[in-house]
Each structure stands twice: as structure tokens, then as C-alpha cells.
Length: 130
Image (cartoon, rainbow, N blue to C red; front, side, top):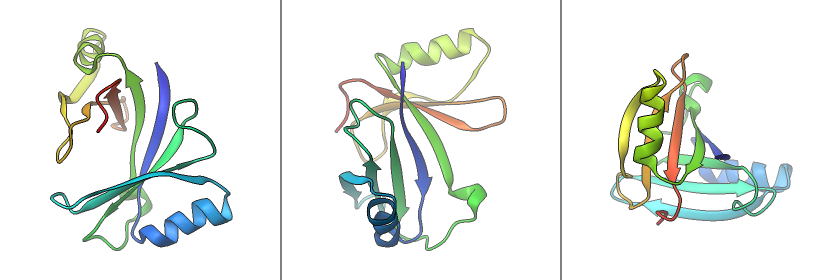
């Protein structure tokens, strides 16, 4: 396993992209709009996301601002099989909050678990991104 990305929700996507790229010197790695879900995901980072952890900026089109507590999203981890990863978490007494399956409005196979404090950890299955 390896750390893939950390997701934060942003109210003004263009402003956030400018900050992370122009101010912090990250590169815009990829962007995808999900019109049916009314959100956009943008990935920024200092290097190729196949080799380094990156930052996911999620912009929900109908939300202009977040409190810091609601702006945090999750930490993502690459797994070979999301369903098996959930089984391992459950077997070790962990809590699965979303079973493995395609993401809403997409095809990437994901699952979510919670840490003891309630923070979300996303499993993203290798080879299922789209």
C-alpha cells in the first residue's frame, strides 16, 4: 500500500488552483468535471502521481465556502482489491462505511473506512480509474 492523495473541498476552484500552482509551485496534474454530480476534481502536486502523493481539490459547484472542519475530505490509499481491503479492515475490528464499488458518477472502484476518530480513508483499486 501507499498514500495516494489527500482531498480537500474548495469553494473557489480557480482561486485554489492558482494558489497551489502559482504560490506553492505545484503542477496541475489532471482535472475532471462530473456534471451529473455537479462537482469537479482537480489533482495537483509536485510530481507524477504514480510516484508521489498529491492533493485532490474537490469543488462542489453549489457550495461557495466551507468551514475548515467540513472542508477536509479524506486520505486515499491505493489497493489491489478494494473489497479484500475492506474485509481485512473488518477482520481487524475496523469500520467500513462504504463497501467497494464504482464511485458515483464514475467507474473507479473505491471504498471508505473510518479511523477511530471518524476520519475517512478511501481505498482506490489499482487499474479501475476512469
